[in-house]
Image (tube, rainbow, N blue to C red; front, side):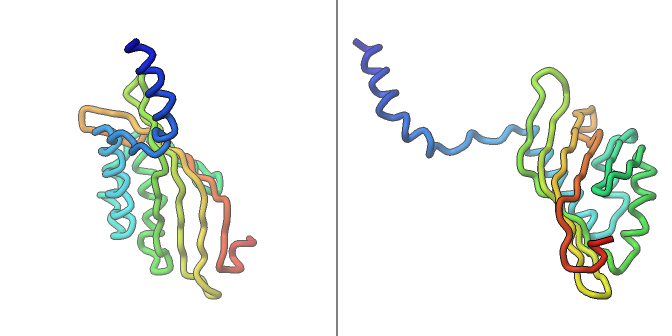
Amino acid sequence: MLLRIALLLNVLLAPYALFAQPTPKSTDEAAIRTLRAQSNRAIQERNLTAFGQTMLPEIEVTRGSGSHVSGRDSVLASVAPQFNDPNFLGYVRSTDRIQLSSSAPLAAEHGHWTGRFKRADGIQTLTGVYLAMWRKTDAGWRIRSELFVVLDCKGSAECGQ
């Protein structure tokens, strides 16, 4: 009898499960989201040291254009000219979801990004998607690799180049 009541309740209450609140985020997911926010803030502040703190030394980055950079020092050297360029208005990476590995100290961050630059004919806005691999270390979560893809460009004739 109890089994029948339980089954009946499941059937009757199933539609309401669609409106249930998501389960609380794990501390690992919260840590990754916090680190992404710190990285975005470092870009906005043009702080290379803070920007590099979220990366493993052996990071691999594929940029939105398809070019590739290996190693934290090389990544920082490649973004330093942008950080010093007054026409660079910044990048923002927005996390859509994080998946934690059940078999390794890894996580996948899926998101979308925007980059903005002052150009002679307006503000160039690049947008796209990204995937970041995070590795949990003794020092906490760090980015092992990132892949960015440009999907759209607006606001400047330079978009057509």
